[in-house]
Length: 103
Image (cartoon, rainbow, N blue to C red; front, side, top):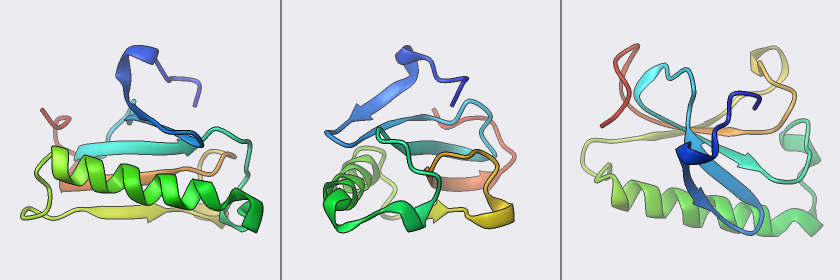
């Protein structure tokens, strides 16, 4: 997450941070990144269950705050050859692909 800028921070929980994707592929494209180093989804263990609670609560708040319930949204996690960055992260996306960032 080398392109992260603190002024793009949308939300922070005990176990994750959330910010607009620096190179969005959708009109609304947010990244949710665990604070603890985790290569992929399979490194989440029982001791990391707070991450899952924080993820759901943060997504809920973002969907409500951005009025995405009606327009729709997707929560995506990539793995294996589809994961471009070696840190577990989730994408909250909405709108059309390859449009200007969400305003």
